[in-house]
Length: 507
Image (cartoon, rainbow, N blue to C red; front, side):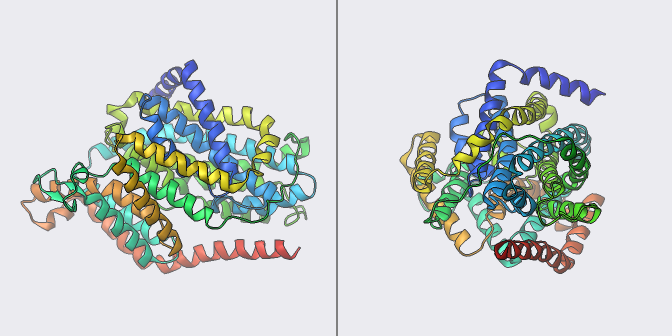
């Protein structure tokens, strides 16, 4: 009941005209970037970071929340109308959604995706509001050894699961941890990895690193693979659903939510596995024979799973300060930019910010439904924007944002360096999330490691003197041993999607 009262208090703060305006801007921007293939919410939030530092943290995070949910919904438009999933989480939506569009039912596919996103996002946000405080209460009592072990768990799971190779994942993590070391050692006062450059003594600005790796690196990578021919977009009218569509959609929405939320809260859980499980479940439960030819259940379930997963990521982010997705990593870097330390104390020391943010998720979710259903034909026309102009604009705003951070041309040089690093990582198949996690969590891990060793008088056995820390290390060992089975399951997911795509091309 206390959480409900706090959520209502956050709702009152979020419902001011200015915050509603920021929520609407975030939703529209999020849908804009979500519709365009290759531009995800992480990249869009990274681009906005320098701009939002002049705003109050609450207003900035309301905009980020709207942008995140908008980006998740926008990906479904691309999948349905263009058969080009902007992110891997939208692959399952494309399987049935594009077939519905080709059969003249694109409006119904977009409508069930929008309403399913609303249902899953609302339920997911309510679950975040009730689970996060309980988890934070437990986490506040954690000692330095347990908290250090938790961060090791997050890094190991993310590093070994993402990408095609654990070796590449650890290489990316090593790069991130090394970048996190640059600057003055706060304990000894000694500069580390500064190479005599005075601008590096104050540590690297996380905004410049995030914009360079996510925005500039992604823009360069996508620009290098531009289509020479304009995309063929299936025309669509205003989304709507008939009585039969509603009857076929509401159960998949709920089942997809049940699949998506727990996976979203897990490090490296992601949205791919729950969307795949949701698709398989709906296919198995369906008594109709239109699966594979445009079944609305195949759009409703995966889209709900996708958005519930997006909500689930807020649980570890708010309660533990652990980012489990690229978008969460960028949001945490935004918190650090405001001088706010992520972690279990966030919910007590900045309760107003957290509860207003949670309330804004509900508002953004509602705005998403209200604004995007009528605007669907407009979003479809965005797919015809010439890509060279689009990515040139992204490069311009990335450079402008980096310079605005400290008004120092050196930041632009850093931005270009990290952009090229991001491009090379994509070229050679290195996942970027372990790198950014290493940059964000590296300094926190160093602090907790030193605390634990100080308490134990320098004895490394002090890292194992708490029961939870021991349990976590056992889980890490089990996870590493079971990685081949996990990799096989992920390969099955990707293989199934590929087979379906090949069938699509044949048909």
